[in-house]
Image (cartoon, rainbow, N blue to C red):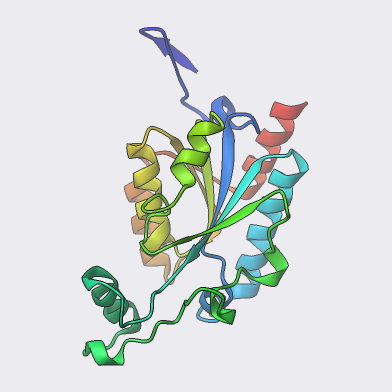
Length: 213
């Protein structure tokens, strides 16, 4: 921790890794997304390990759910984004794959939120746009946000950047974040090195134990 101008400036994971200062964001671990991942079982287990570590220390946990609106009411950015993700050339081919209350929209059963945790819906890649996440974190005096889930290069990277712009210390748990290729992973991790802190599951779990001992 460094200090300057009356401020404490966190520099390491140890500076922010405590249940009082940090919350965990489980990003888009939904049934419909897991079905698109070739090795989803491994990712689910990795994210589950992170969740269990956070739960064991009573850390606040938020689950984001990517949501699509019926095409009849979807907007320009939603339709264009859906075309790109679904790799279709015509708007008429877009399918609203993550309608609220649909099976695909649900959090994976193995990671089901507890009654003391919350899942919230979002329409954009950043988990902070159009959701109550920022308000909830600020009201709880949270300073850092640990992030795990899928997919790193699509939604997690913009969420990490947005978190930093809002004044949080983003903590990316890299081995609990899915990427579609090692090239994509390497590029995103390089891009985010200067934005927040990058760690792994073992270090995250160990730092929580140290903070709570």
